[in-house]
Length: 256
Length: 271
Image (tube, rainbow over all chains, first blue to last red):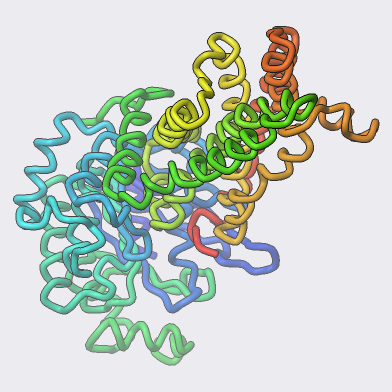
């Protein structure tokens, strides 16, 4: 857990998850996990289906109330104090859509105003340039291709220049070229703004390329947490995918 | 640099939500047509029935005159709730709810935006129908003057209270509860005595009817049209009951939202 320790000692964490438990009736989705993310860091949350990644991210966003434990974002306890910080956060997920009948510009304008962005029109023009949206900004969102919709969703996620950005499988269902393009924009945004980014992903290429730290979850618990290079060395593997398979198939002890 | 903490209630955020629904409404002519279609069909059907009855002498001729008024007021109640609930359902259908719940939009702002859209949708649907009633049957709803304002306010308050409660149910239970949005108001049709006096109901059911604010409005409408008396006392009682109903609807919505946050329903927003 060296990465989490270093994050917590250098500066107040942007995100702190302490002994988080979330149960839905008799099912435990998250089983007492703890981690802290340093401001400006980029971290991946890896795990198979049902590992608890989405519940963890939803709890950080304030969409889900913890059963036990504590989550703070930029110093605010979630979800109780969420209105102190929601305007400084944002998220993107292919499983959450924007109204399809509205044009990309209309959607961005609505979200810009919800987030209290000054000069929304100017910010939309800026994002249209950065994310190559100029040709599609006045088209209905529902008539855009999957890749184009992802770019619009990314523009929505960046509309308020968030200090904390949460991404749930940001490149799912994208072709490799578009996925690579999206990763490059995310990386640039983080470097320029010093934003804290947490990505839940199944895509190991994405994680290796973008993330400086990987938290691996299985059955609601954290089973490993380190820098990608350290994980590769510890498991004696060449790729994170091999590490991931070792972990989810229960071969961690064998690897060690 | 940190941006300032957002205001507790922001007109900008409410206006953003209203703009969102307005963009949607104006982009779809079937949505606009749908707002006018059923009120127009109902008004024509009841209008012709009233016309037929009025050709006969006696009590039925006098009672028939209240039919169009009842139809138009019922539509304010029904369409007010539907206008509120459909705007909310648009968020579920477009899978946009998590985007909103993750944004700084507060529940009270969301509800206020839905209330404003309920009025907008009602105006789009009702004004042409009121004009048609005037043209076809010589019934001038606006001729009711101050009484109409009192009827309108009370019916809208009830529709918003019910709409808020139903939205909470859908939020908590997903689109499986969508049918409630379409059907819940119909229980008010027999109980609030839209087309007949409260005295028609059995004694025990009259007590139930008098617990519902629209009952006072429809009784008030009949008193105005058949006896030419404006019953301010009925309107004030309806207003008091509406205050209780609106508070209960809002409390239920907030409680269901909290429950949705506890059980993870905001992550799903599907069936």
